[in-house]
Amino acid sequence: MKNNPFPIFTTPLPGAVVFDLDGTLIDSAPDLHAATNHGLAQIGRDGITLEQCRSMIGHGLRKLIELGLDATGGPVEEPALERLVAAAFAHYAGHLTDNSKIYDGVVPVLEALAAAKVPMAVCTNKPVGFSRRILDDLNLTRYFDAIVGGDSFPVCKPDAAHLLGTLEPLGIAAADAIMVGDSATDVGAARNAGAPVVLVSYGYTQIPAAELKADAVVDNFLELPQAFSALK
Image (tube, rainbow, N blue to C red):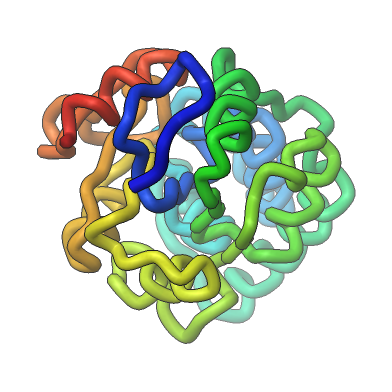
């Protein structure tokens, strides 16, 4: 643990903080929603609502398409599925941050952790190329010592290896880090790796965050210092 020069956090500080991306740091649902419906339109489906989309995010765009198919008439044969997924990915690649935004409180907390010299990382199931571009577009890349996507390793969250692989270049053990996310996927990764986990209540999850048995749940990023203190 380190001494903390910034008043927003109390000592001792975590060895590192690992953040999920979608639904935790940024509200990316509008752009993912547009990409999903673009894919579904390839076979004449009406599409899903934005609220439906929010509950389906967390396992990658391909899974989002599959869930969108289930919600709009059922699955399709593999060749059609591949065509839909390709169309959705192509659309998303050109519209990553058209309507995505940083959640309130995120930047002040990242600034405070950076001032306290706490290593930070992003561990997301989104492809790492997309993740880096989004973080660049939103001017968030500078805060993170590692950015790891769903295609960075052979496995992804909730597998422990995804979180452990994210922490490896930071040189921090999982027990000394904190995972901050929004869904069961993040809780699973943290539990499997042996890390404490804090969830935000406003993210993308079918099961309310309060029911996912995280170590703490916050309604706003500015509540993270208090949540971190309660974990010690």
